[in-house]
Structures are given as C-alpha cells and as structure tokens.
Image (cartoon, rainbow, N blue to C red; front, side, top):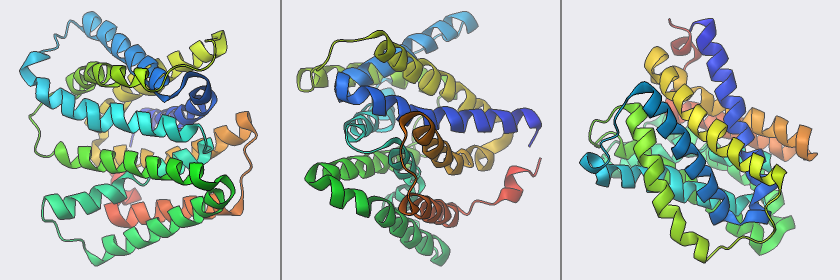
Length: 291
C-alpha cells in the first residue's frame, strides 16, 4: 500500500472514530432526529457542491428505489440508532460496537445468500460476541434499563450495516460517488418525519452547530469520498482494515476530549471484537500491503 493510501486510511479511521465523539456531545441537546437530519443534510449539500464542481449529474429518479434502500439501511436508520445510544453510552463503547458490523454481515450472508459459515468464521462470531458481552456488561449493570436499550440500538444499527453490505451484492450497479450522493438525499427525506417524535431539547449554540457541521461534512461527506478512493485504489482488503482502527480512535478521542475512563473491560472487549472480526472476514495484513 502506498504511503498516501496509508495516510488516507489513518485519517479516515480518526475521522470515523471522531464521529462518535461529536454524537456524544450533541445528542442530548438536539435529540437524535434533529442531530442526524443536520448531519445528513450537511453531507448531502457538501456532496452536491462536489458533484457540481465535477460536473457529475445525479440520476436520482433512475435509481430511486435503490437510493432509498441504501439511504435507509446504511445511513438514516443506523445513524438514528447510534444517536439514540449516544445519549447514554460513551464514545469508546459506540465505536467498538460499530466495528461488529462485519460479524452481522457474515450471519446475514449465511441466511440470505445461503453461504455456510466456515469453522474459522463461526469461531470469530463467538469471539466477537464475547467481546461485546465483556464491553457492555459492566455498563449495562450501571446504566440500568436505559443502558440496555442503547446497547440494543447499537446492535440494531450494525445489523443494518450488515444487511446493506449484502444488499450491495445484488443491487444495481451505480458508481460509488453517486451511491453516496443519492443515498444521502434519500436519508434526508427519511429522517425528516422523525423530528416530530424526537424534538430538539436545548437552544442551538455555536459549539453544537460546529459539531453537527463537522459530523456531516468531515465525518460523513469527506469520509465517504476518502473511503471510496481507498476502495478504488487499493481494493476491499485495504478498505476493510479501517474497521479495526476506528475503535482505537474512538477510545482515544473519548479519553482525550471527554475524560472517558479506559477500563480493562473496554480494552479487552475491543481486542476480542477486533479479533473476532478478523476471523470472520478472513482479513490478512499481507493483502493490505500486497501492492
């Protein structure tokens, strides 16, 4: 992998890890729906400006159903669920739970596409689920019922990511940039009705506004462009490696900026989740640096 790709990979992981930090500091004030509507709208407008600059026309009506499926299952609903969980769970826990998406993807693939799980993948699932138990067990006890609902929300979100990953294998062939752009506008429409049920709670301040813009433009719009560039230049194995780095940055940013304690359960849970994901995906560091 060229140095430029390595730097893009690290930057992408740091940005996606930072998204949980921004959600953590804004979710309680704005409420999940207003926060995510601001996030996807900022990302959609940013991608629109990029498309105008590149003179790339978005054929929204040609793939309307596809964009709404991706917009719902890969953006709007998972973002809402993570924003709901961010009202209770800390940033490091959110980031680590997010990294279990490939585990759910493997289970859904085995059911949907009739792909039997290999022994190594099955072992990975057990290790990953053990990691989740270690990570959230203590928090579930201390946070009570609200903590449990937040944990279930995170697991529901990553299950949707797993579904989306499998859907893309049978979806219409659409260029990556158009996929990101079209699905983001679909997400804007999908999230909008939720605002009536999850209204804003506190006045919008400048720090809150800047956090939402950073979440939408940098952590979503810019991050999508970098991810697709990494996927194009270095292949899926290299792009997948970002999954294992995001929890590390989520833990780091939570510790640095929110004074979140890094307990033994956090470190052990992260290690088990990452190990399980590596086993399930068959990830190999040799594939990343093969070029």
